[in-house]
Image (cartoon, rainbow, N blue to C red; front, side, top):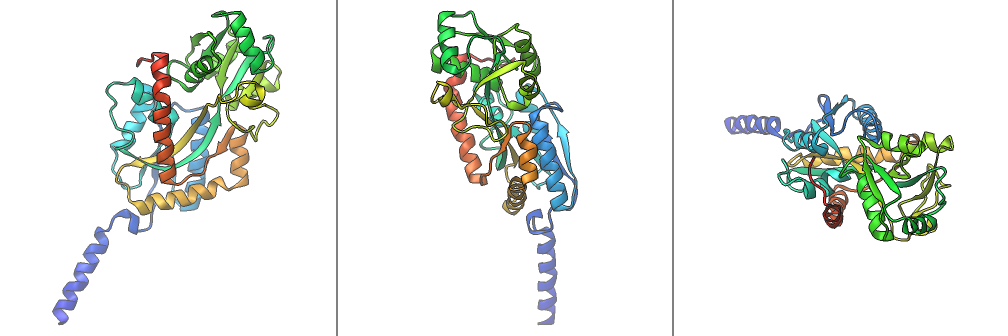
Amino acid sequence: MKVRHASSLVTLITVLHALPVSAQDYPAKPVRLIVNTAAGGLMDVAARVTADHLGKALGQRFIIENRPGSGGNIGTDAVAKAEPDGYTLGQIQLGNVAINPHIYPNMPFDPFLDIAPVAPLSSSAILIVANAKLPANNLTELVALAKERPAKLSYGSAGPGTAPHLAGEMFKTQAGVDILHVPYRGAGPAVNDVVGGHIDLTFVGLGAVRSALEAGLVKVLAVAQPKRLAGAPQIPTSAEAGLPGYEFVTWFGVVAPRGTPATVVARLVEHIHAMQDDPIVQRTLGESGLETLKETPAQFGQRMRRDYDKFQDVVKAANLKPE
């Protein structure tokens, strides 16, 4: 009996040591948070807030690693192929799962098989931004002007396949107008050319245009979501400005390699939700036009699938090809 008990004890100890990281104190070492864009911009705002909060809450460093390229595919692929132990996470955006799969014929990963949704962090609604001198002060007037001047008005984007590009194409389709697309290497240059009067419009988040707006260098005709922005409540919604149903809201969220222990995911979700309830975090995000988006992993996965289906026709209509 004593031998059997001793043997059982050894077996139990062996099993405990072999338990996945989910059953032990997580995290026991620093965690990588791979952001699939270059440093700077809204993705980094959300990433910095998240890394700082989780690091303090969980007692380990969350290290941001920027890995841009191929429309975000390079960074997200690194997450998909990482060890599913909770020590490599990724921050993605809508385009990585809803747009890229419709553009790139040979995706290096499957967004629904190779990565696991953890939690969305924030949403960023698109604003319809116009040159300050454009003779249109709402969407009704903009649509009328565009119909009077077919193919004469222009809008700038952050490049083919980006959210500003697809937001512009969606606007053209829903409004029934023809507006020239002018691609740029980022939202900043597009905003600068709207300010300078070289193009008429752009479709960007509040963070990209706040300083120009406050200086009176541009005007915002509407926000493309059903409610007004908490950080800029003076801006009317698309419906209020004359184009009901025009909605374009991007999001940022945390994912993990498929197979990451459920208890690790649950712990991350618990602390991400606590972060989203923090008024200081809400204010910090709001200053950049971001609003917290609180969902369970299952709800986040459903959102990813919905957006994938939604943008299939948009991408096809825009005739997008990989660069």
